[in-house]
Length: 435
Image 1 (cartoon, rainbow, N blue to C red):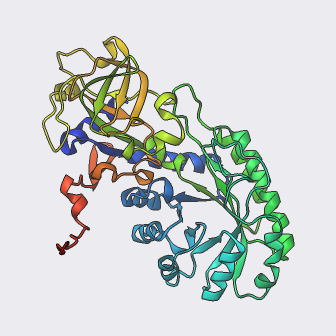
Image 2: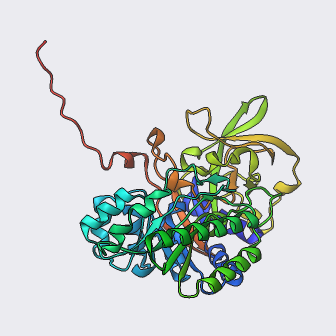
C-alpha cells in the first residue's frame, strides 16, 4: 500500500485534484483471479457501463476479454479500443438508429433483444447479427442492486412463445438467451442460485422456440467489499457451478458480463481539503470533489458503509493544476511531520463542493485532523463513479483521469477548465421588440 500511496501522491503532484487514478496492475490481477478460478471455457465480457474510459478498455482488451455495451457511445468506445467484433455484446432496452448503423459494419457482434417489439423492429432492419433474447428472471435476486422478476427488462412468460413464428422464419438469427438479475452480489451462494435459475429459464425458452442455444449469457453482477469488514467473493464455489454448466452444455458458448468486479478496486478518487465546516454536530471538511463525480456513493450508501478514505500526506497540497507537494519529503521517508496513522483520529464528515445538502462523501469517518491542502484518496472508486454521475451539475468541468502501472503514469483524460462547459454551446440572438 505504501507504494500505491507514493504513486497517488505523484499523480496529485502532476495533475492536481479532483482526479480519478486507476491501478493497471489491479485491473490485470482481477482478470487473472477470474481465470484462475473459473473454467477456461467461460467467456468474460467487460460491461462498459461500469466505466467506459478508453484507457480502461485498452487494458482489458489486452487481457483478452470481450465487451458488453448498452449504447452507441459505449459501442463506439469498444470499437475504438479494438475489441474483436465477435466478442462485442450489444444490450440495452432498445437500439437507437446510430447503434443500428454501427452494427451494420459489425455483423459478428451479438445483439441482446429486450422485447418482442424490439425483435420485430430488428427483423425489419434485416441485420445479419446473431441475436439472443433477454429473459426476465422468474426467480428472486439476492443482489444488492436487484433486477429480478420485478424489473423492467427482458421477455416475460408468453412473450417467448409468441415469437416462435418470427424466429422460425429466419428473419432474425436467434442463437440463445441472456439473463441478468442484478449487480453487487456479495456471496457466492447468491450467484450460484442466479446461475441455476438463469440456466433453467433459458432451457425452457429454448423449448418454447424449438431451438438449440449456441450462446448463453448468464449475467454476472459479482460484488466487491466496500467496507473493510466485508470479505472477498469466493470464486471457487462459482467456478464449480460453472464447470457443471459447461459439462451440461458442451457445445454452447457460456458468457459472463462483469463490470464492477473488474474495475472498482482498481480505482481511486483523489480530492483535496479546502476548509473546515461542521455537520450534524460533527467536525467536517469541505473538499474540491463531490457526489457529482461519484454516483457510486448514492445507490450503495457508501457515505456510511465504505471504509474511510486514506490521508495521503501531512503537508499542504494546492487543489488544482500541476504543483509541488510539501508532502514530498514524506514520500522520500525523511519528513519531520508525524505520520497520519500516528495522529489521533476524529469522527469527521467529508463534504463535497456542491450547493446540495446530500453532497456528502463520507460520514463519521475516523480521520486525523485535516487541514486545507491535505489529500484524501477514496478506494474502490473505479466503477459507476464519473461515468454514471450528474457530472455537469453546477457547470462543473470533468476531472482528470490517470492510469498508473507501477511507477509508470499515463494521462487518460485532461482536466477541463471551467470555460470548457461552453465549448458546445451557442448564443441565442435575442432581439428587442416593440411594446
